Image (cartoon, rainbow, N blue to C red; front, side, top):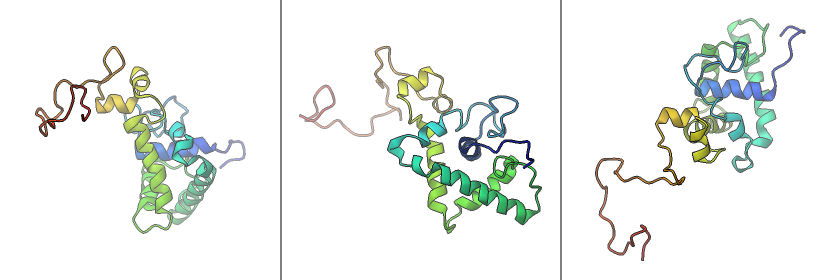
Amino acid sequence: MPETECPPSRNTVLEAFADTIIPGEKRHPDDRAVAGVSQGGGAVAAGAIDVLETPEGGMAPALDDLARMLDEHAVAYRAGRGLPEDREPFVGLNYDDRLALVGELLAPGHPEHAMWAGLAMFSFMAFDTGAHMHTADAIAAGHPGLATLGFAPPDEDGLWRFPAYSYGRPLADVHPDTDPTGSPV
């Protein structure tokens, strides 16, 4: 990396990883973390960093080390393929090389597989659930993952009701000891 460039922040490296898992469109023309290979918001726009940093997930204490290790793997990846070393290690890789490196890290049998699978899982959670936000707030804010999945908004009172069965038919008979609220008597 040229001396005049600032090294990427921990979050930029982690965003680049999340964008490799669920790509999205660039947030601005100079976005280095998001490769821009997909339309709409991906894991980064869905809040991957916020989900990673939640205390409930337990990943926050490891994020600095994961970003550093990801850059170390990127340096080795570049060296092994004769790629130029004039850009940030992981963030500076093009999308196809990011994808190939992440594929290696997530391969069964890789000694660090569990760490990278955890990081990938949080990227999916951010997109699929907006786990760092209340679902109604995420939908109101236009959460890209929930919008892509077609997650239904709540009723006007903030509650979800599903008058039609999602499979178009009941999957089982209601137990005879169930009261009108759906609770067992």
